[in-house]
Image 1: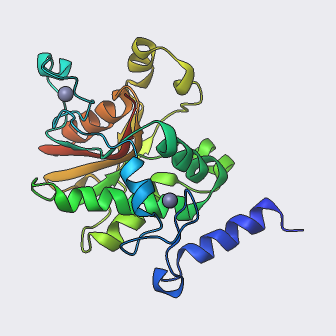
Image 2: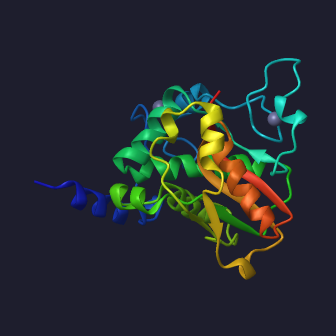
Image 3: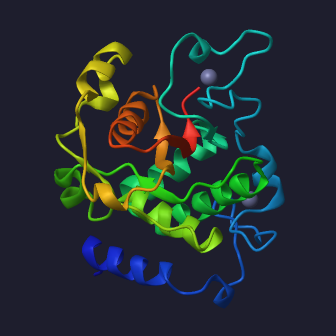
Length: 239
Ligand SMILES: [Zn+2]
Ligand SMILES: [Zn+2]
């Protein structure tokens, strides 16, 4: 019997085999993939794409109303978050995060890379992943944002990865807390190390943006450390 640690090691190993060895297969319906990606055309069209959305904070836009983020200063300049966290995207992300299926992470990373290639923004000098707390990392065995960064780097070479942020304390209860509590709970959650290696323009990379509080705090920490422009890149935004 293959235990979960072995399964994860094998999965990890498979993740690093070039994709060309296998014909792409849709991760959602098992039909042949299209355009060299593990997704068929039908399932791709049915994904909950985050359009239209606010170019500053990626909140799904609802018609004529101005985004609430325009009433407050935001620590990031631009956001690229191509998907909404619902339906098939929610299943792909949870399969990647909680069951360690790195092929799903790779697919999601590819979709983000495509969105970045299609966006008109200025590319940053480095990508800074939002780190997982050390306890969570031990529990899960891998850091999903670092894996995403790896998938991105393959597509957006030669964008360097800069692991400048450290998480100061746990976020175990974040998912179930109310928005205001989350904002106050996240204050001071990050520290910066390798300050001197930080360039002037970075993209902060996260998997899911829920209230935006974690990303905002991470961006604020980078700004205080001297970064003058922080963009936000993530897979999905909670509507
Ligand atoms: Zn499909
Ligand atoms: Zn906004």
